[in-house]
Amino acid sequence: MTPWTLDDLRRLDLKYAEQGTHVHQRPFRAAMELLGSNFVIGAGGNPEAKRIMDAYAAMVPEVNASWPGAGIGFAASVDQVRKLTFPVVFGHVSIQPWQVAGFSSIEEWWAWCRQDQAIAGAVAFAVADLHDFTNGMNEVEQENPAATTLWHMARSNLEDVANTLPTTFSHDSVIQPICMVAELSMKAALVRGGADPDSFRKGKDGHNLSSLARRMADGRPHRDDQRIQAIVGALPPYVESRYKPAGLKRLQVVKLALGVQFIAASSLRRMASADLAFQMETDEWPGPRQPFLI
Image (cartoon, rainbow, N blue to C red; front, side, top):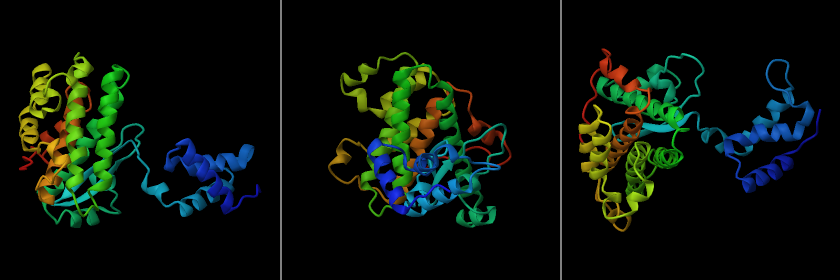
């Protein structure tokens, strides 16, 4: 057995932090580094690898909480927000909303949804939006580097909202990343359609979300366009909201967050094949998507 101590894990964690290694990747890296040629996992593997990874996770609990899966988003039951971690899927797998939301059973999820079909349907659509955004970006990310960068930045802001909104007391600072999700994803769609990325720096329309939404709809019309205009029309002027509270209730902020997650997904639905939302909209349940009523 290769000898190792907790001090070894602390030393490696500091090294990985300085290297910028993602937290969820560190236990695996540590096991590889400590065991060397003895590192074997899976059937017939070295059990010491699991012991090292378990010890690392016990030392740094964020290891499990920071796992990004294939993508991170959120769903809500009224103003309770639940982080979604979309799984890495191989082959054809049935996606269950309660599993994506991290519940241990469908009964636990149904109780969180207040046994309300409308809330449960909205959660299902939030999962569909995360699915379409994640898989749509995977499909097109090699085609236009400038557009891909903008979508990646939109995803980063979406993750910030997902990590902050479930537990934050003051929601004023969440307005900024919410608005950035909408702006960056629509600009990504426009750049993917041929717009010059530098063109957004000219004039006052670079932050005009209604104008960006109209341009996106004109360039590649989609069934989501009317709903998108309603959402961006409800967003506060976020340049001003940097310096003073927007005066929104938590429930309003939650609905805006779900709205921009929808916009991000729609920016890719109109040019990629991923469209789980359409399947849900045409199924008996959840059926047609309800307005966000922001």
